[in-house]
Amino acid sequence: MCWGLDNRLNRIIKQDNRTVMLAVDHGYFLGPTTGLEVPKKTIEPLLPYADSLMLTRGILRTSVDSDTSVPIVLRVSGGNSILSKELSDEDITVSMEDAIRLNVSAVALSIYVGSKYEHRTIVNLSKLVDEGEKYGIPVLAVTAVGREMVRDAKYLGLCCRIAAEMGAHFVKTYYCEDFEKVVKNCPVPVVIAGGKKTPEKDALKLAFDAVSHGATGVDMGRNIFQSENPVAMIKAVRAIVHENAFVDDAYELFKGLEKEQNK
Ligand code: 5RP
Image 1 (cartoon, protein in one colour):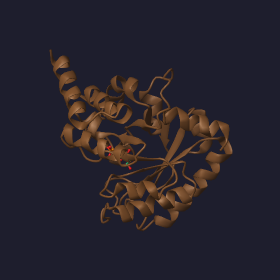
Image 2 (tube, helix red, strand yellow):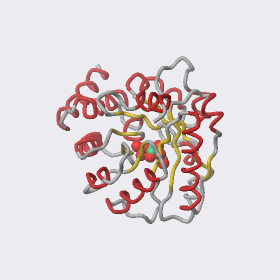
Image 3 (cartoon, rainbow, N blue to C red):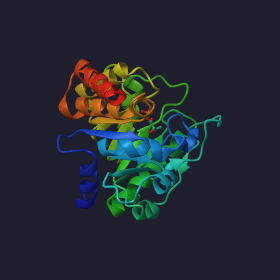
Image 4 (cartoon, protein in one colour):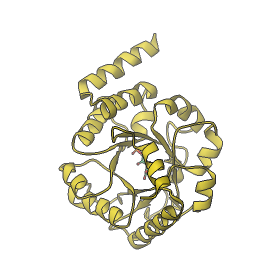
């Protein structure tokens, strides 16, 4: 692997081979998502606890100070909206040159395996990997799940493996039963999305189950920034991912920090 690419990936995935990525890219097709109405307000307090920040270039430019040392994972696919009938209708939306100008540590693109535009999104991933390899920028493939897809190990394993075969340097997917099979069959690091907001303890259990079944970490959004106490939540997630905390201990930490904050 090229030294620069390796160095960038190592900035995201820490020495313990784990990572807590903070995903705030939802607006690229959802618009002003709950909790991200004023992105700067949401991002700023969480940034010190994020191993990387995943977002679009518009939010990076407007809502993140350029003196940050937190690695940026730039979403470079889009072109659809929540109103689209076909969510897989995505293309590459940012050039590699602009990603480099923005000094990103990785770029991210969604693939839609089994959906109408599967072919285009997978070929786009390969093209992005070619560009990334040229300049030493790692590529995160996001295995987006179409509305009608079942999130099981067979399907997600297929998506992750295809992403890795196309050359993605790391993959983001969903946790599922038999998750260890998904990880085993994917030769690059796998991180999980948090999905829709759930009670904090459930989200912590999701993070725990994922890392204890082989995930490199989380790329979590709504379960952090939509929490009543986002900073307490990201600290509790960190305890699981980086300190191998058990769910009950991480939840205690969350409750304790919450209490302190409300004093
Ligand atoms: C959408 C994404 C989002 O970043 C991700 O899914 C959001 O994370 P969460 O589900 O934890 O809110 O990549 O395709």
